[in-house]
Amino acid sequence: MRGTADLPLHTGHAPPWLFGKMVKLGKAISEVIVNEYGTEELLRRLAHPYWFQSLSLVLGFDWHSSGTTTVTMGALKAALGPELGLVVAGGKGRASRKTPDEIVKLGDQLGLGTRRLKELVRASRLVAKVDNACVQDGYQLYHHTLAFDEKGNWTVIQQGMNSRWARRYHWFNADDFLNDPQLVAGQKVENKVMNLASSESEGARETVLNLARERPKLEMPELGARLEMPKRANWSALKEVYEIQPRNFEELLLVKGVGPSTLRALALISDVVFGKPPSYKDPIRYAFAVGGKDGVPFPVDRKAMDEATLTLREAVEMAKLGRKEEIQALRRLGYRIS
Image (cartoon, rainbow, N blue to C red; front, side, top):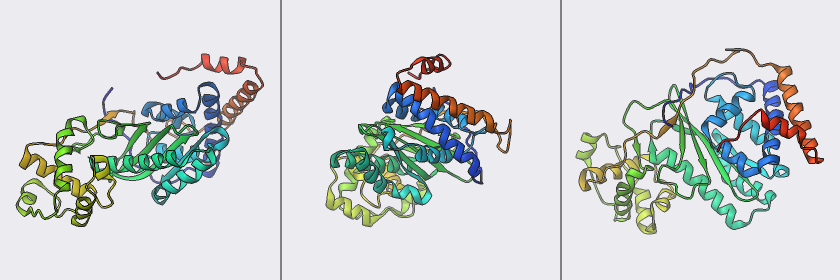
């Protein structure tokens, strides 16, 4: 399924009374899913753009905007914990840069070993680098969260923005970070997008990697004028790449300083000089209806929200005591995403 998604940027904050209720209801919904299907299923659902959007609306959003990502993940971060076997690291702005430290701290609480924690930190860094540097779609990342369970399963939900719109990127247990690995929801980009994370960019990635391994002494002033190349690549980073000699493109991405400008410069050389162009297709896939906030189409029903939370909590408690009737009744009202 492919299309466009409208996630307009909205200013302001969720009121404290609403956020508190979102945390409680989010925890109740999460407990039901974990008890019925396990933590991996909840992570899989969070990685589905439509299901995530639906969850945001159930938790109290009656509009489609950038806040459905940041506030919903903030509520889940507060709601989930080691007692459920599932935690969330990261967040918006400055909090996103604390993700690696939080992964280690929360992973220790879940009992994950050092090797698995390193893998999770690496995945977090790679996902951010791919969506910010490999996928050059005009959106700057400002929100990054990684949810993971006690078995090491993980989902990353991150969001970028331009002057008017937001774009959300979903990942789940990726082994391959470079062949159309993510699901993207947001406003379709009208201008040309460069996507080195596409399967169509395999030749370009190989050429870029080989170029980066060479001694960094290339000067390309004329190409810059003709092809809208960045004014300069990060030559210090390229020097480090030359000294490290990364074995693959993922290792190249993880070198500090190898960002959008450097990758774009090398990708354009790959295209013009070696005939190996990167993909210029926008990876956008999912569309949502456009709505407004501030009570449109209707204000949050506080009483109904509290009742829904209580119903789910009671069902969870009964299930723990061996009474499955309540959970089975709830199951008949819904469906499971395959």
